[in-house]
Length: 154
Image (cartoon, rainbow, N blue to C red):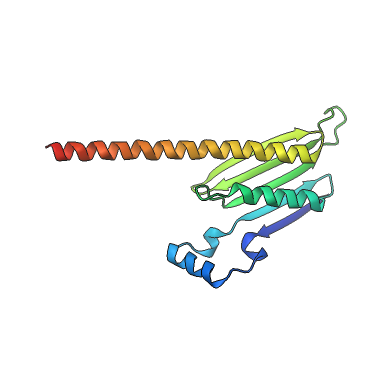
């Protein structure tokens, strides 16, 4: 039993004129701003509470510095009797620009705990991606400044 929900961020709210003007000024198309979220459940029925929690946490991941293109969340109930007490699993896959993918899979006794821990792991991974980007930019700026100093010294 699989249930699929696909949500586009721009479909849920009506954009006003100021938002459209801002996107035109910034040169960002509406397709670049939209966030696709796909929510699936396997071997368990999707509850509105889980769906709302996933939507809220997915939107919270998107910041000014991190732009998420696509997010996929899969909730799976493992019915294998030897698996143990942790039979609720949450898989979160987030796609960033330049074909970057961040994945977290967490198992727990309840789906609420699994969702919470999977999104915490994704947040941690996105923080690491942002730190690496900032370090790379700082290194490039230092190299550019050093090159400018050498050119002015000659």
